[in-house]
Length: 431
Image 1 (tube, helix red, strand yellow):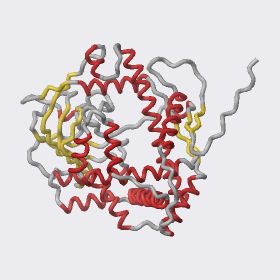
Image 2 (cartoon, one colour; image 1 turned 120 degrees about the horizontal axis):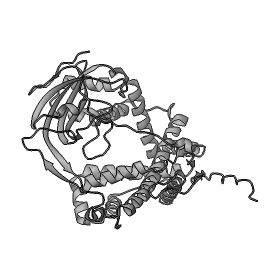
Image 3 (cartoon, one colour; image 1 turned 30 degrees about the vertical axis):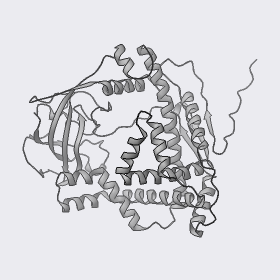
Image 4 (cartoon, rainbow, N blue to C red; image 1 turned 180 degrees about the vertical axis):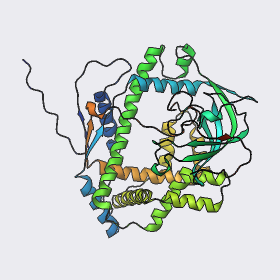
């Protein structure tokens, strides 16, 4: 007679634990949460095995040494629980669709109107209350319904590239930015070009061969993709553990620390430029409008996020300095070459030489990542494979063409007026 179930092994510092759940044998294209949790454990072990066997640097400044010691002590008391979500047939089908798009061919639409399902390269400026709240430059988008801006992409149907138009529609109540919900927005859109994508048949032997998975049938391909997705989600679990650790350290010891305002301002500006600022500048938006956009972007919540980000970087720099952690460009070259074996080493070195700033950023991030692994090795990490961790949905506005992540279905006509115009730099908006 079977005895009572055994208790799970207590978590070990810096080592993963998977909380197993029962269940039958999964289908070929499914990987249950326990399998993903095991992959996450292996990924964490591989990451910790690469952590440097660092020695405390005797020349570290007192303040640096103190910051590093505080971080290490706090990390030793951190307990992290990360949800190990299962891989279902829907995710496998989505990855298969991504492969079809990757291996597909495109047909340009020459002097022909845009149709639903096409991909368009567009410049977009979106205005609410006379202020720019969205800017995209040269972005490829799928002409399909979008859950956050229903009607915008569908309104492009019938335009003949290159053509400009202005659309007005009401922002839905579920839009991510609360103070913009329910307002009428105006979008100045220029469609540069359009194309139709011709997807290969999933059962075509040539397509299956071109995926590079070394399989012969669709079933074998789907099984291979399920395994890949489980490994990928395992690595994402480790990434989530890293992020969670930094957040907990900030709450424990970082909130009360002094963080220079000029560094916070610089981080805010970088975030704004990546989010909307660069696209605004490329589309000729005035400096006054750009300054107003930056001011609107710099909310109390966003400034708090920037402060946390600056503190985390300074903390990791202190750990790296105190433990003598270093990185150099030759290591970066080797890592990139190992990741892309088909690219010649000389080509890698040439690109990094021409883009010295990128190379320096990679070296810096590699050094900070090694410091983070030292902190992670002190924490207790649990990968939770319980059913309660399932069914998380992530939605993103305006998915790019070829991503396969467009949300929604069906055609929705934009409410309000829809007026075509050319050369309009700043369209009006009704509140």
